[in-house]
Length: 147
Image (cartoon, rainbow, N blue to C red; front, top):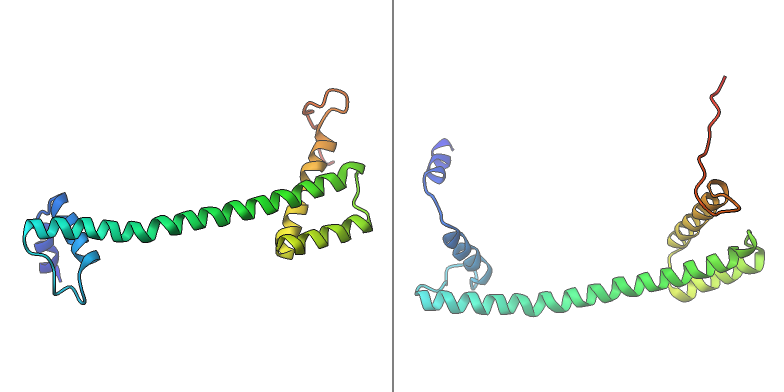
């Protein structure tokens, strides 16, 4: 085992060698026993490998971005309705039913909807307790020491 480490340690590889071995592992046919030998073959294999990976990676990234953006828009729509329902300071039974219908319509999980509602309620409590009612600026909250 020690001998293997010494061999690896004393055989310096350049960055190009590492890149070549990486591209061989990525592009190799079968078990890696068929690899390009000439420089021109290695060059074309590297280009074809990059194009192949790009043909898969780019559409997957675009789809994932679209899904994330769609989920964010649905959450924002739910948040907007929560803020609208909280304008009077409380959520009544009719607004709760409407929130539940909207949650189902938007395809949000109940846990996600509760988390969004909790975040909005915490922000509204912060605004009520720590903001000056006249100037709408943050107040210094004084805590009494327990005796």
